[in-house]
Length: 425
Image (cartoon, rainbow, N blue to C red):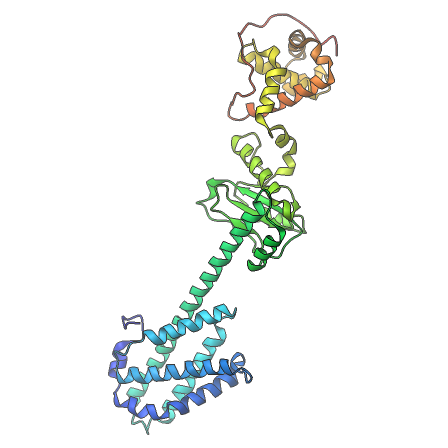
């Protein structure tokens, strides 16, 4: 580590008399023993009588610091990189063992206190003036901060590497859970253990809209698997039906376009994400409204079933709505809306009028037109069921920014006929 102003003040080192190093060297072993004894006495984490390797590491660190300090007094330009690298390695080791830096930083303060005490006690024997002693004390404090910074740097690097590796494992785990057909349970269990993710009994997948990818990322709970880099950013929420879990998910996803798939057994996570993605697609098309916070697929199951195969529903619409094909689009819209309301209201003309906010006579007129167009088809329960399916789909798509799908085409003719009601109802 070069002395570039970010390390211990070089001018302070240069102001120390170099012969001070010669006075200090003979006492280094003694000072090291005092430091180690004081550290092991005052810092419980370093008191390991049966652990020779740990004691050896402690002694190595203390001796290396003391020798570097004296060498720097002797030569203010002495390279500080080796001792800084050594403490970075210590910081990485603490992170790797899952410990904080608190004990190490306390040990450094205790060691610095012992060094300062020994210096002040031997100031006369070392021929150190009060001014020089003050400079040594300042250097000790700055040097201690420098080593603590190096250890913290190594600690942060190790934690970031561990976090990155853990995140990669979790993304890979999410891939395995979303695989179709699913991966082997043993492979999932092994990777879950490596990712520190306890296997839940049930899960729900979440699909996120990409328009939020550049916004502030939600603060997901630690047990949620997340991969926001996917084409459809996705999550897996464990035990989604547990106490308070729904509120927790809603809070984490607040302000985000998010669709929660159905709760399924762990090994069926692929089914949950498929439902969530399908629902998200319908939300983005405007078929399903997105103004009520987090959207749950299970609340839109009939719509999902309806749009499971749009080619099939289009073919059914072409077949069942063929009687409307020769009308103008505006006529088709009015009659389709009336027919759907009639089917949904138990074939009651007055209720249809209330639903559509039109005069009952207008409804009766339209119903006679529909009777002329569809004839006996309106008497068949199976055909009425088919009609309601395609008309529901048509109505949902019609709400999507005027999208005209399931719209039969043909030669347009004008309205005609005056009919009051369905005689066969």
